[in-house]
Length: 309
Image 1: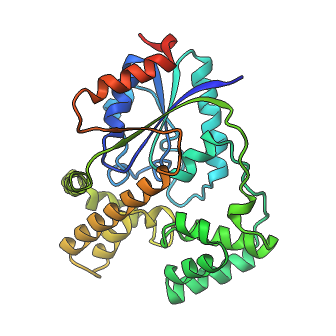
Image 2 (image 1 turned 180 degrees about the vertical axis):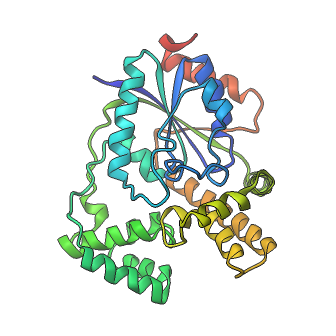
């Protein structure tokens, strides 16, 4: 059964949430988050989750699944998101996969079969010790040497996934990127990509960070820290969280932390664009152009006319 799936991607702060909410209301949609950090509970401001009010207006899935100290893999995301998509489709609603985590989104759209390689805890501990001693960059450099394709897709601070990729290579002698197999998509896909001129996007990113600070990002991170969630966790390595932890630990001023968040987010947006530009099926729209919503609306109505309310 080829289920319908609308996919909305693009860099952070480009306007994916606003567009997805508007389309969901018009096409009887339900939103499945394609963001690797929104699965964590208690991390709301820094991950830019849809508000409680927005989630009341439109059902959201794949948000607030686990605590920040719980491990979570792309395989788990794939299984849970596929289940959510099927349930939405069987309700007669349009499933909408919305987010900017490229690997998570493609694990759904491209039918990835992720490598089933058992954990080697001793090897993992060895790599973790190396990262503590020499920094995450040392692990990332090691991955670049054996699997440059996977390394190019992972941020140096994404310690857990870097360790996993190195573990796969250590156990099998093959690159993670080689073992990750693609199959034809099980969905009837429509891809929409959002973009805007780079200077404007960077301005919006800076403004979003300022808004996060005004909403209480420091208090959010402080409460997480008080509950024992530390910087060694994958969740706490997210942009916005690791910098504020450094501020709270007295390693930098708040101004320096905010500046690092803005710089890190701008670099992240650049990587997101590079990732999604590889996918030829995406219909790209510059959100600053006149009538852009009408064009997107027409495209969605042409592909999925039966959902229009």
